[in-house]
Image (cartoon, rainbow, N blue to C red):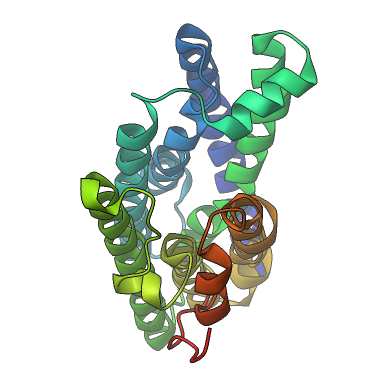
Amino acid sequence: MIANDLSQSLASLLGGLGVVIAFMGIGLAIAQRYRKLTVVDTMWGLGMTLVAAETALVSSGGDGDPALRWILLAMTAVSGVRLSWHLHRRNFSQDEDPRYAELARDDGRSFMQVALMRVFVPQGAAMWLVATPLMVGPNNEDVVVWLLVLGLVVWAVGVVFESVGDAQLAAFKRDPGNKGKLMDRGLWRYTRHPNYFGDACVWWGLWLVGGLASGWLPAVLSVVSPLAMTVWLVWVTGARLLERTMMQRPGYPAYAARTSMFVPLPPRRGG
């Protein structure tokens, strides 16, 4: 049984890798066409959805639970498509993201070389790694129902924090009266990064459903997914990196003193 599950998981992982390579190739061509590395951000959620779809429609089989494939696909599509659409609307009509502009300027190589070696290959590898719960979970037939329900709840909390946090920030920025002010309302009153916290919850929820609830083997094979996302979102590409810039803004240190950086908590008094 274990050998069969492992064999099916390997097939799913290889199938997902093929999807990621093909999809990132398309993204590279689009980035070259518009001369914008920011395209890769829009592709993240869509790529995850395609990996989940490939697993549901092609790779999974044998003893795996068919219902679990479609549950994981639905969860990934809801969160992934929403995120991609949000990033597309935010980024595509604007100039290149300063992070990518600085990367291209400091690297010194041609746009295509930077896009391939510094952006799309690393992001593609990260996409495949993070998507492991979507690929290995459906290959197990013994699903623990209460863990599946818990995973759905954690995932739903993540989707709410991501979508509501993004919507609140967008509405705040649209109001001319808020120019020069800091967003410290709604969910932003309890965490300085509700969207990053929500994204982490989404992947812990997907791991609970596609990993832990699916058995010890899928759990072990895929736990790197939520761990890596949490590390990236808090310390690497997310909150900590953004805070370096935000701390230079007037009023932000005081906001940071009273507001939790990541996990939502009641505001601290005297901050």
